[in-house]
Image (tube, rainbow, N blue to C red; front, side, top):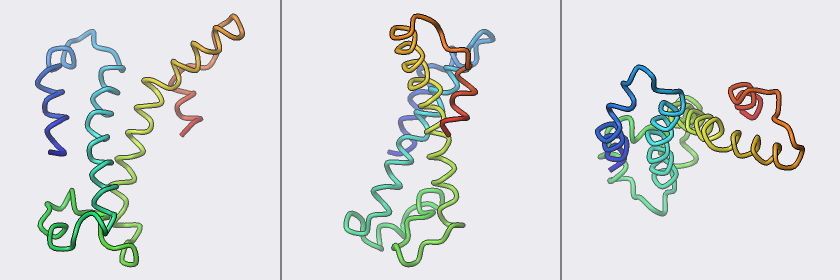
Length: 125
């Protein structure tokens, strides 16, 4: 189920993503759709009261990484979920949060900000 949402997005928007005039917003939407289910899966799987050890061990490697009990977790084991959540966070900021803040700034101050959304996203991250 973790991979169903990105696959549906790819099938539905394949022409828009591969179009030569597609923008970075389409790419950030794809990244957000791909990373959000994995991040939610990681949050559920890392909670030992939700999933038991037998179920956790039956998962494929990419879904099992970093979900061991809290006392056995390492930085190396959590690197994949950390990178995935960082990419999802940057995609959300660039696609939704920064334009919302820029619009609010325009409404309040009466002028656009001089910082591009890519630079604002890197500052926020």
